[in-house]
Structure formats: C-alpha cells, structure tokens
Image (cartoon, rainbow over all chains, first blue to last red; front, top):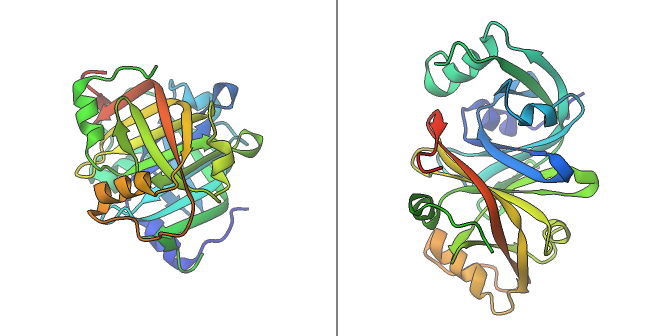
Length: 137
Length: 137
C-alpha cells in the first residue's frame, strides 16, 4: 500500500505542477527527466512512450522518485520515493489524455505512438518550503 | 573533460533556472531533490550541506544527473548526465554565496552549517522544447 500523505501535500500534488522523475538505469546510473504526472487515489500516475528506453527501467518493482515543484514558487517542492506498483498498456490513450487535459486542457496530440502507464506506490517523502522542512512532514 | 554543449543550451543553463538533481543511493535506489546550480566554465556547480546523507553518494566519480527547467515555460527543459568530477569544502561559503546571489540576490542565510561544493562533468545531455527535441541537440 502507498504511504498516506498529509492533506496539504495531496492538495499540492493535485495541482498540475512541474515535475521531474528519476530512476536507475544501466549500471545503476541515475536518470532524470521532466514529466507530467497525476495524483491517482494515493498513487502517482505517469505515462511514457512505449518505445522509450526508460520503459525497461520503469517496470513493476523498480525504484522510482518524483520531485514536484510548485509552479508559482519552486522553493516549495516535494520529493516522493517509491516503486512502480503496476503498469498498463494505454491502448485507448485514456491515461495520456487525462494527463494532457490536466496540463494543457487538450487531448494528447500524438494519436499513433503507443503509450504505457505506470503507477508509483509511495514509500517515503520529504518536502521543503523556502529553506525549511514542509510543515506537516 | 566535460562534453561541449551548444551555445543556446549554455545560455539556457546560465540563467538561474529551477533544477532537480538525481543520484543513486543505497542499493542503487534513485533519489531526486530540487537544487540550485550554476554553470561553471563547462561544468555544473552544486553545493550541499556537509551533513546530508546525499554527500556520501555524490563523491568523486559518482554518476549524477541534473534536469533543468525553464522558469518561464517548463516544457523547455534540459537533462544533463555525467559524474562528480571534484568536490571541495566550501570553508569560506564562497560557493554557496555565489549560488544564493544567483538565485536570491542575497548571501546565503545560514553562516554556520558546513557546506561542500561539487562539480559535475557532463558526458551527455538531451533537451526538449514543448513536444520535440531541443533544436541543437
């Protein structure tokens, strides 16, 4: 089960914030890239192009991390640590459309490239507000 | 030697952008956190509290990654991959002051906590502008 988060952190994550996902690849090297995400009933939904190399490293059980910045003031940020709980072929593009609507107000533009969804189970987190720890952390 | 980057990427990195650093910790688990950085003659300067656990994982030779978002439009972003080339005790707080001035216009507030600087050598990068690759990438 995902770690329960404080309500103010959930409220922060529900907003369409800039985020960076991190994972470990070949030889344990870290990788990071900007990503869309959504809060999904206690887990974090992400979605990726099925042909991306990262897909192999973001399989079920893989450790994964997400740092979410406040779009208005990036000195507020929350980092989530956990693992990939499950993945699903996004055959109808429903999940990427959900993310595209959330961030752009429109459906995803590319209707041909295959997509895969992954849900991140959260096992720990920390947050910062300006120079101090997130109050409810 | 650090990988030479295109001039437009360097110009992007020279601005005080929001950034997220990634590294591999215990058991190869990925970690990410928001960070200040500066472009320093072909390398990336970061600075950390000397007591942070991450310090052990960000030693010379450790693989490290930095995703830099455009503060005005985070669909422009650049991810840098590389390793820690060298570290230095920031005894006079000169490096953290450089970063604090860059991001806040003021010296670093905490004058008592020991700080360590690290320089990241860049070995590869990729960038995105909206939905496509960075033009000079």
